[in-house]
Amino acid sequence: MAIQSKSNALQALYAKWEDEGISPFFPVIESNDGPAVTTDQYENLLMFGSCDYLGLSQSQVLKDGAIDAIGRYGTNTYGAQLLCGHTRIHHDIEAKLGALSPLSSGVLFPSGMAANLAVISTLAGKQDVIINDRTAHVSVFMGSTLSGAEVRTFPHNNTAKLEQLLQKSQDKRRRIVIVDGLYSADGDYAPLDRIAELAERYDAHIVVDEAHSFGIIGPNGLGVAEHFGVLDKVHTIVATFSKALGSVGGFVLTRPEFERELRYLAPSYTSSRGSAPAVAGATLASLTHLEEHGKELRAKLEANVTFVLDSLREAGVDLGDTRSHIVPVMIRDEDKTVRVANWLARNGVFAAAFVYPHVPAGTGRLRVGITAGHTPAECERLVSLLIQAKREFGF
Image 1 (tube, one colour):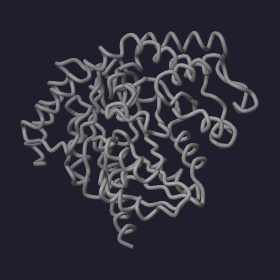
Image 2: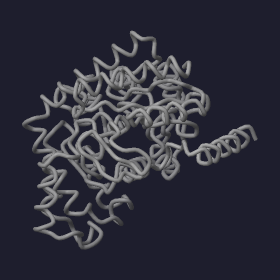
Image 3: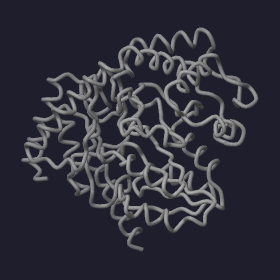
């Protein structure tokens, strides 16, 4: 009843924001030019609300890759991959992914969500237990439900509670721990070094969603598992091309024996056709580009992140525990969060407003995405406006 009451109250707020013309949701992007966008409400906004972390979605390299692929293969693939296959470009992407880590097999999916549904519902069954971080991506919980396994959760990054759940689950055929590598609303890392220790002690599989960390975190940009040096301890990594790589689609890095299960048994693979050739062309171009330029792009991103985090924390802005390019500006009150987002837009900066049910009630925040495509001057503009907003709105 309390949940229903909160939902009704927020539905009233959504309607109020729409009536007042300040709703930040479902903006229509009319045009973009690098980090600047024009929406149906505002012109020339600095985009600090995207997940284009390396600034690649507007790269001519990726555009050329997409155009070349259309020229070779047209605009679509023939049907479900199991029966009709996929293009040489798709094949080359999977080969390139498989060569990146000890998880030597790569499998492409239409989206990261489809990949999570496939991995979890294929890996787990009624004899198993899935133990999820309570703030993991919604697709993790969807896949967990589909699997038919017992589902347990532990408070965010609470490895003591995780250990208790593992101890109590020794009667299960399989224990599967699922976490995000980098949490998309908080910007903090899963403590995968400690989780790997527990998984080894209690004979558990680890599945990591690296959607917001792949391409960025770790010496070679392979994610938080690489950052903590536990790639060889992880059973499966799920990630996406739609964040740092500037394209679209999901993928899985795993071991060859599980790769075979996914290709033959996972409905979101067997019953889905491969991504459009244009998408695959952009993806392959991005992976190739990052082999040569990834280090310098990550260094540029890190410099921008360090400046923004240090400057905002020095000014007393609450950023939670973030240590990454995902910067949650904690406002907490849902109505105030939306009003601050609208104020920023009127002053030329786009920042995403996260409110319930996308984050827990009472934890509304602006989710700021720092990218390698932002200049120092643009980062300074963002910091200046957020400090001014803090004074004006009192958060």
